[in-house]
Amino acid sequence: MPLSGSAKIQGYEPACIHIPPTRHIPDLVEDVRSGLLSRPRCLPSKYFYDDLGAELFEKICDTEEYYPTRTEEELLLKYSKDIIEETLPDHIIELGSGSSRKTRRLFDACEESTHICGYAPFDVCEPALNQAAAELNAEYNWLEVTPLVGDYHAGLGNLPSPSGTGMVVFLGSTIGNFTPAEAEDFIEEIRGCMRPGDYFLLGADRIKDSGVLHAAYNDSSGVTAEFNLNVLRVLNRELDADFDLDSFSHQAIFNAGLKRIEMYLISKADQQIEFGKINETIFLRSGEKILTELSHKFHYAELEAMLMDKGFDIIRHFEPANRYFSLVLSRLLDKGVTAR
Ligand code: SAH
Ligand code: AVI
Image (cartoon, rainbow, N blue to C red; front, side):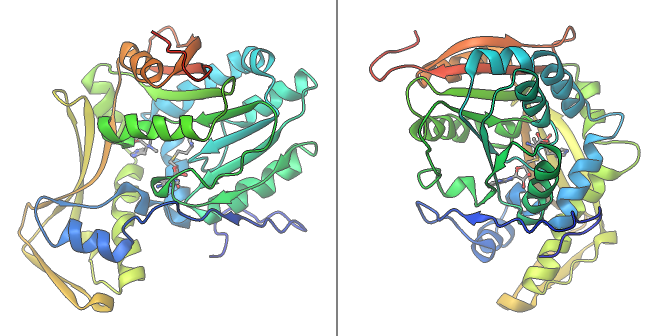
């Protein structure tokens, strides 16, 4: 897929390594058949992230209302030196790295501490990886960047595991896009690709005033709505579907009981959608919803328990004065040692 939007970096040809799956996961056709042809209708949120979706996500991060990126970046700006000096990683692997924009604060801290490490961003969105790798190569000439493309739902067992101290980084509260059970399994899977003594840096969004949460997913400039609708563009292109984007509206609500934002596309009319490539048709009633994303919010104690239950020792917890976000640095204990 071509890079779009911002300028390509001249003279640098990034080559992403494709990480083979360790288990079968449904492809787009299977996800559409299981998610859209039956009720309740839903789609996995990973399909947002084609090249346009990745750009729209970056625009969300710049909106006034979407505080998580800004808040986490401020924490990284303030504490990256502490993190690097404490961990001295030989290699950093980042899951769902996107543009790697906040991770740059860790590399700045490496420069300040004259510490050298390698960096492997892992993401399902190849255009975002290419763009990030090209920019990082230009900005940090000492940093060896190895972009890895793949789907983390298909397992982490084939990720490279270079010798030396590793640090797994999972920022942006992307952990919140998993259900609680999936998040626990995923942390166990992360543990499986680490060695005792390796570090895990997790960024997660906290439970807060529902008005603040609601505004973050319903920004006044309508970028989150565009991002949500983009999944229909992906289906039109990939499955020769005929969604009319103007016939759907964006909805994001905070479900306080389940501690999560639920994002939906709502059909504005009774309508019929054809999927030319797979010879399927769906009928949507006016007001019918398609669930496109869950974004769970956490109490700090839940994050702590989730990590300790999986054998991680909490080293530091960073939070801003308003407690909007948590950045948790933990370390994998030796086998057989439990954190509590
Ligand atoms: N970590 C960045 C980006 C967060 S957006 C930040 O904090 O700003 C979520 C990122 O996860 C996107 O780049 C998206 O492409 C990636 N992603 C979503 N589902 C994925 C999957 N199943 N496997 C790998 N990457 C995925
Ligand atoms: C990537 N993920 C953590 C974002 C979130 O907040 O759940 C995606 C997003 N969806 C709408 N706005 C941002």
